Image (cartoon, rainbow, N blue to C red):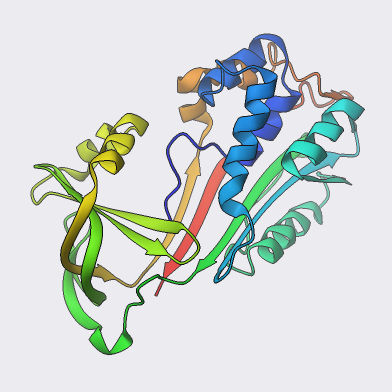
Length: 291
């Protein structure tokens, strides 16, 4: 399954709803919704939720939650937005207690059917709010990979290391694009969803290639995909990724949201301490299994 570059996580949008003034403007810029009025923003969020509607042969679940310190008061209008727009669960807890971390992780584990067993390692006693977004997807290929065709094959990792891995194989017609830098193919699931596989050309520096990726390039490749016959070989793999986002979000214009002297989050009222509602020790965790 592919998630377009312009799609932002529910947790960031929920935090944006609590922000005001310049903090809100900076977050809107980073989330690429600065040009949208409140009505259009609501429509855009509703559009993002369309792929997660129930459908046959595909199980997709999206879950949002906001965990509030017992020292924090959530303003009623903010709580209403979270429930009505994001279908978010609101919970109050002593986030400085030892039970807080396992409680949040248990929620994530349950929502992802055990695929993500934990998302929080530790919380500061000064933590005011924790915004969590979890997505669970399980789909069936439109054209299944037959187990009898699986063979070990040589696969080159992003670091240039070569490994013998079980390779899934099938032949047919696919939506396909190729240029001197890459090959791209669309592998559809039943239920109008798809995984997009991009293979850099031989000899391409993987780091430089990743830096060149953008939403504009992505849209261009998709627009140029055309039906083509061929054989697909991809390894069975498990992808596990964790990233600290504070530096990246600051670079996108969210510096004020991380500044204890300037951050403006009027959607909540917090006692002292903490000095300000959101000191985001933010991470994104993705676990993907293909077989």
